[in-house]
Image 1 (cartoon, rainbow, N blue to C red):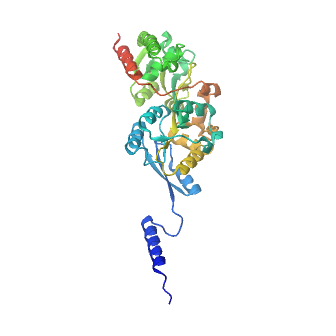
Image 2 (cartoon, one colour):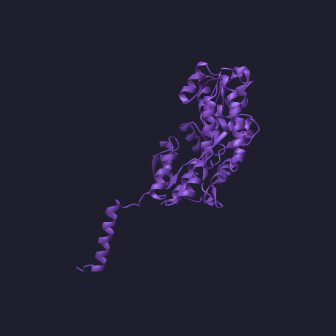
Image 3 (cartoon, rainbow, N blue to C red):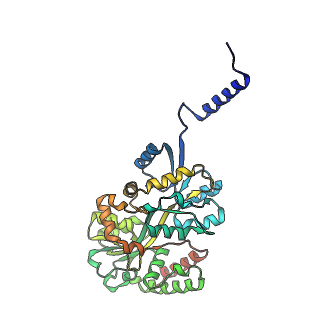
Length: 361
């Protein structure tokens, strides 16, 4: 019997050892996509279909903005192949910690996406001429209105109308300041880079909110609290999130979410590629897969929020689809005021304004 040479035997042994340590069992090693995302954004049935169609295993880690930043900062952008931070939480973090890499839009099927949301996300995530986010899931704050006051309340400042005195609720948080500013014909986002101008806008909003205090039943602090106030009829008009309004509409058709005349205030959760992603190809496959209209609709059904996928509302469950269409026609979508990154120092100024509103008699 002719024995194989030592070099051949050594190569065979090394190959056997390598395969044993990787769990190889005679088929191609499975790829993996490590996704860090929000609850509802990667439903089990969507993950299963992606894995079946691509052969890529998906490992999902549920998170939020602060946790995503913390995990990626700690590793220098390693540990995950795809993340889903909000569009206004990318540029400042990237400038400071360098945890993401630019998006290669040639690998993104933008024909599937709402053009206005692609532009809004690019505007919000642009740094040094490169873009760091692709739009994914979005939502807004606007008005939740009972039909009995629908003719009165169509914009944020209408919450101060004497006709709804004592029947109004909103939060003492920055979205209220921003919404009231837009309804007063001011543009707070355009003033972000001019501290004096922004301070002047906030002073006008502060006066308006103090004048409006007699209309406020209570300043809501939690979503469940607000929904209860609207369900019982104690509050007839409120500034709140669209998903809450659609939930109430499913229970009571007399309550609905309204996109204000001056524009709903919008947030977008994005797709972003961590700087040390080990499977960029799988990340882009996931983006293009889940933004297909029928797949994206399943994410909406799971999360309650709509996606940037164009035409996905056709496939969303009927009650949610109908409530969405009643709230947002194309003009209302194009009028959404998308949150840009907040410059340092402005939130401190806003906090002082809100404190003074709270303390005013």
